[in-house]
Length: 487
Image (tube, rainbow, N blue to C red; front, side, top):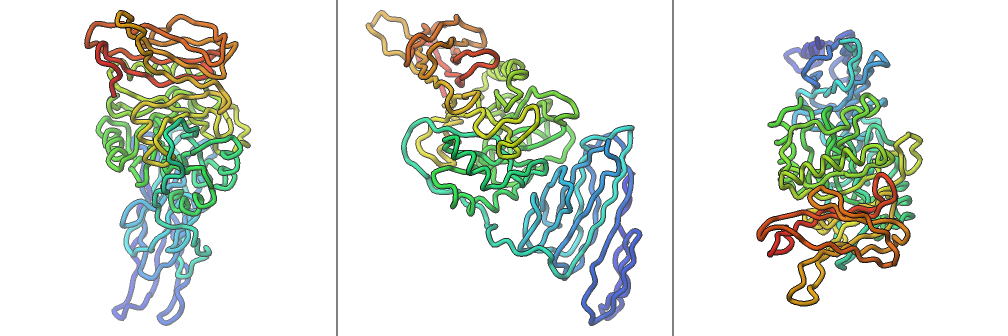
């Protein structure tokens, strides 16, 4: 069960505060005297049964300038996630943050948003990530202040997309899965992210923090220091039945729901409605409590998925093959799902975890008309992506049609490999592995004749092999026999 909210505060007819009653707390103050901090305490237990989330409502009186929420899971075997909502809606999601959440008009702790402190009913949002033994206890303390304790953060400003940094149609290198300290389980500063990405020669990185938009407030300031490196907005849409990537997202999308086709469809539609793409992150990463909800188990039509993280950080060796089966399964349904990769970096290259890799490992190449948010998203929509599994120095593969040598020549497709001498290459056609060929030149051409009945659509991708997973792999190129590439 969940403890009820505190009773409302009492006033006399003249508007003077007489007594504020919180669960376990009584604070007295008189009219004409500066209001003391009002402290509200909530304790209770919840069971493991659905729903996956609950709220702890509390009242905020007019004149409150800052709210602080301290929270405790109660048992180290239980894992509760934490967030905050105002009368107007989302105010932040700290997930597993252990420190208090603090919000005021001009400043907020990490993962939370600045803005006016509206009077009315607020709520602590709680997710039941793990409830061991059937039930979990919690203790929450809400402190309402009339004077902020956090210094103003003038670097925070409404997000606006950066102008194109370069206007040249070519392949650009980046990482679509990077966490900053705005994620509850990360501690990388923006400057550390910029330095590492630049040192690896990347052209863009996406800040995909968990279920929050607080990172967007800093992107103007960060982009101003990033030089030619583009900082893409985004979010890792983290549920207890799968993680997704809202590539280019700039508005909050509700994640606090139990798995259902209608709920996940609404979320995917909400990302697309704001011009973002919906991609699956590490869809086969099923390792239980070591990564809660990481494997994709939501019921979402293939047509609603724009891309898939086919390679993720150090987990690629174990999970590439099941992830590739998910990818090919989506393609079997006719979905043109682009391949992307992401480091899932949480600590700017200093992640000691078994699956930790630095930003840029893997690297995703995107063919774009320019280095901009819009240009990058358009490249993914067109399926113009190549994943370099280990990093930017891996071989490159580009697929294009081979001009016929004469009118009798059958149509053919070429994979042009650069930097892959001594390795092997092959095509994968409609999910079936083609012949393996040794790369004995640089550049090297791997050619395959196109097959199929007139009007039949088939899909082709190519890769450079160096074990499991491949060293480099392309997205599918869809060819309709007698017509050519299809979008």
